[in-house]
Image (spheres, one colour):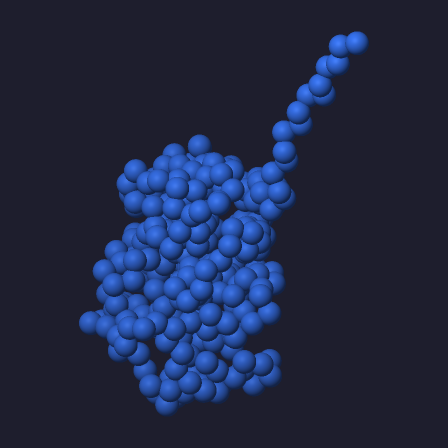
Amino acid sequence: MTTQSDSSVPYFSNAFIPPSVTDLQERIPHLQILSFIGHGGMGTYYKAHHPRLDRLAAVKILPVDPRQDAGLIAGFKKEAKAMARLNHHNIIGVYDFIETETALYLVMEYVEGDIFERLINLRSFDHSEILAIITQVCSALSHAHENGVIHRDLRPGNTLLDQSGVVKIGDFGLARLMGEELFRRKMTEANREMGTMDYVAPEQWEEGQEVDHRADIYSVGMMIYKLLTRVLPRGVFVAPSQLVPNLDPRIDDLVIRCLQTNPANRYQSVSELWTEVTRLLEPPQEPVSPSPKFRF
């Protein structure tokens, strides 16, 4: 996975100082650490070579505080194994995981590409492109959901477009790995500078509220809106077609349904959402005019 941030210091800088390439090499001697990549919403990334697999890899460091995060450290191995079981061409694969008292390390597939968070600011996407991107997102989510993994933190910052045009999603299961309480705390901290919480479903912020796969559907709706309009919907928001000239108005219904506060009013499965997105890739059918009646 590759990701970068314009910020020179991560949001957790008061509690964690990212190690230098040399320091990290000493911590993980079985990998060849090549370079620092950058900061993401929930960790710091390094490029590495995995000798045993003979391929490039990305190492993500998740800092933890053993005084506060004992539950996170204890549950890391189980959840990381679940993430590693995901095998899909639209999901950034997890090769290995390492746990220590002060940090958790995920060794992942290295992707040559860029995150959508930056691509949105560099170029515009027409609605057909966006819908084609979302079909790939839905394909990844469907595979994960079928394997019991909910993303819970889907956003342009952890969704990449590789050099061949394939969408790659990272950080699957990270929110569950961290535990919902710690996840909310970290996301709140991250939002101060990175706006990461904007894509999270409202039920994830309510203590004791059940969170299921429909939280990911909400995040997909937020991503579609941002890709279309370059802004995020807040409060009572306008339909995308009011901001994007010549936009197929059918997309409004899709986005609004994804963004329902009550999960019961959203699409109830990613496959249902995928079917609707695929249908919207087809041009709207012109209404058939009734045949004229002739009098003789």
